[in-house]
Image (cartoon, rainbow, N blue to C red; front, side):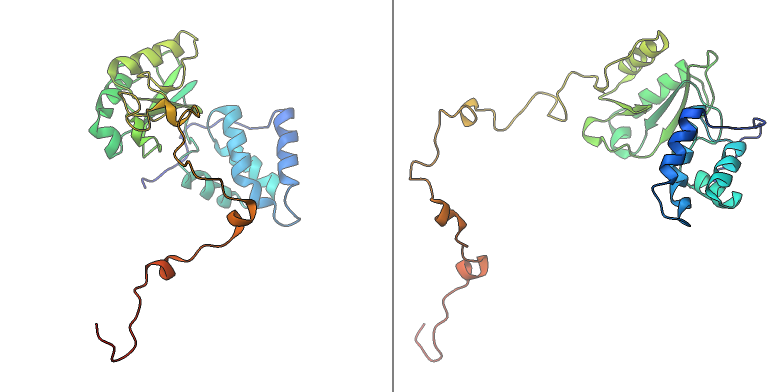
Length: 240
């Protein structure tokens, strides 16, 4: 992991909004006395949600709320890459460039980000709408390439589809998350290939014409695999 440091320009102060402060106090109350530090990730996440990034004054304020040393909260903020330690755009575009996405074209997604947002990662676009970064696996390898924007995932990307998503966001629209190629969930690109016979589901086909088992029969334990499959042993000296 690369070294993560706080941004060189910091705001003068940080305070939670009244609603977020009430939420934070409720979150802290979930833990017994002396265990308030357990809420540190939740409070940092809420602070980032409010400000867009984690600043030094925010870390100091959260440390005071939780009775923690400043360095302990700093350790958490700098360890977890989900915390942004520098200002970001309104939308943070996280592009997966791990092997499965790279093999099917994540370079094209990165190229669009360099063109539409900024040539450099972690740089806010001129209009303040976007910043982007490369990230490790986002867990949607079957639908690669994929990028995450906020809490939404956009899958089955290529250059034009990425441009369409960013363009919609820039216009104030909300593009539909999920596959940008039209497929449902993670089914094959050409549609389902197995279990396509509708009679399997509409009740028109019965695959067992025998009588149904009674409740008592169904509850009886069956033989273990070792009992069913073990060969019969002949007694010693018996002919084989």
